[in-house]
Amino acid sequence: MSEHAESAADFSFDTFAPSLDDARPTASQALAVVDRSSEALVAQGDQDVQRSPALPDTAVPAQVAAAEPAAMEIAGEAPIGPWQRLGREIIAGVQTLVSAAVYATLIVTFGVQVARVDGLSMAPTLEDHDRLIVNKLVYELGDPRPGDIVMLYYPLNPEKMFVKRVIAREGDTVRIVDGRVYVNDIPLHDDYVPAEFRSHDDWGPQVIQQGYYFVMGDHRNNSSDSRHWGPVPKKYIVGKVKVRWWPLQDARIF
Image 1 (cartoon, rainbow, N blue to C red):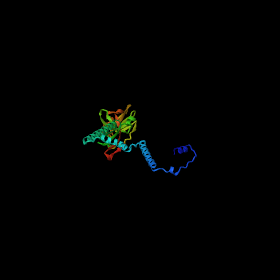
Image 2 (cartoon, rainbow, N blue to C red):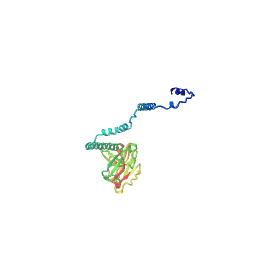
Image 3 (tube, helix red, strand yellow):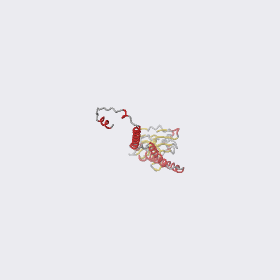
Image 4 (cartoon, rainbow, N blue to C red):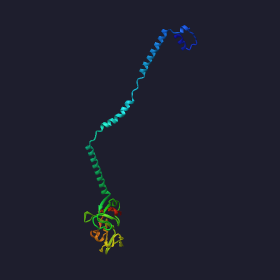
């Protein structure tokens, strides 16, 4: 058998016809072949087991690893008691109030201011206890103009504040004859003053000095204004009245 196998390996074309007796294996030979085959299979199986180690079970550890962060997060959050929750809510409320106070301070300081009218010196345009919104920024960017309703510090006592109307500005000549106002010898168009609110006094003529403004109340016979304490410096003018928001039925934009 080995000689013929070697010849076949050398590509020899010699033929050999074995006899039937030679080709017919005995029972012992057949059992030996079976035994050797089974041993080979067992050996081959052992090699396969050794050469193919078991794959690691990655699915379960991955699931466990994915679940670990959530478990850690849950474990890291301690339960909050009612007193702790109340304390947090109080702190949040205080922070909100402080922020609102800061914003309100900035708005009042640099932007707008809410004011209330006390008295009737600006009647009938403004009545007693009217609520106003004053634009404080407008005169940082420009100058007051005749006809503007302004809030100002009282020149004789700056702790008080008045609301008046600008009549004339620096360089203008103001004269009042029998209650009739003239600016640069031109009669003032003041049809917002009813006849019963007019005065009959005389004043001037006077040129308004640099940086000053002449102001009057619309209720001419019931107003303390520049006719009594002189023109007002611009630095005393706080801002321009833009809105009357109360009473609501009389709300108006100026």
